[in-house]
Length: 73
Image (tube, rainbow, N blue to C red; front, side, top):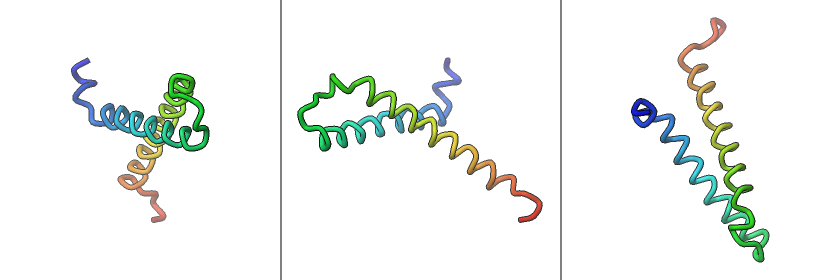
């Protein structure tokens, strides 16, 4: 568990998830002003986690491609 807490990817994932949840909640409040956060809580967190996973995987492949270029480049 302590190695997980020392992992910067873990903290970036947590911060990205929280930031995405805040932004998604703000967008939902703009689009649907009558709906409270409690009604959308699970939806907001699910979308935020999916966005964070997609961003983390994209960063992983981007960094791998930059550090290990193909022979043709």
